[in-house]
Length: 427
Ligand code: KE4
Image 1: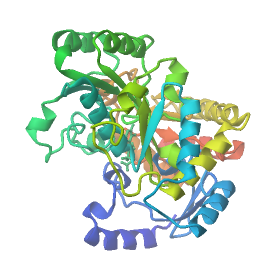
Image 2: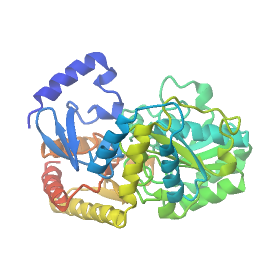
Image 3: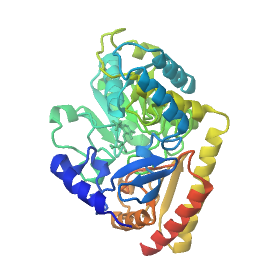
């Protein structure tokens, strides 16, 4: 494969953008080399500026669950564009998407649309603070909830990949209100809550941690979070920006049977356009302006194009059989990758929740941030590079989840398995 044009573009971009990118995880710093510049995408495939094509397991970091440039999404967007791209006034589309979200997430009684996952979590926390009159929050090590101040404490995603889990620029006075505990450690949460509940507004959690790969909750962990928070009047926030409409149509809360007080969504509900949403119990959501005093706003919130892409994506996903197909294909991929690793003699641990997954280069079970960090990032880097040159696009970090879409075919999986066998052997 040749990357001549990508290399040239990256040199140009690096003079103009910090690190040559508009989001750190896109740079290949953790795996070496230059990021590939993309020209177009269709179905399960990405096409770069040098004419190479890849089977894509990044899917724009999650949103493209029906595949890239799905004909129905594209057609609806074309029509929507003709009507105008933003009005700063309500549209019927916001009602349609809100209805779809509410019917898929029974815990959500009212929802507010925003423009990113970061806005969703930041605003949900503000709502929880406004509702309880308390300031402190509990988050879990390695969970990433966007880049708001106070959430960049022991954060996952790029913050872990690049070794800045506690970001400079976050005032100590903000960070001191964030208490971090290990994921899957009920005792640690219990200790903090029993001691300090009077000052704790909320517990925010990625129910499956996709920002240090794919870490599953141990049986009883989420149930215990629910029990403890209910007992002490603490708001339980599920950050389902990644897991929403991905682990199951109803997200991790449906898969694990837990009802959080607030839920954050993003990615899939925008069908590839900028979006986020937060919602939950009526009594908390009615705190939000203009119904209540907690202020939160947005020039482009509920944007008609984002609503359109989200509605069309959810329509496709909610059709009979779509999830069975998506989860069936994801299970096939799991089998194929595990088999390739075994045949190649690679020591890895593979985890999957619905249509998100991660292959860790370690022999130990991964249950939290500390155990995820034991994975061999050098081995991952060489696996990543070989996969890329075999035409498979993975996230350029050991600490990110991979994603499947409805567009991935049996042939794609076979091709991925062949590439994986070769790449595991190289490692
Ligand atoms: P955005 O602000 O990037 O839309 O969403 C923030 C966010 C919040 N919560 C969870 C659970 C998330 O996974 C994210 C964003 N995820 C990363 C990928 N791990 C987005 C990719 C990027 O930062 O470029």
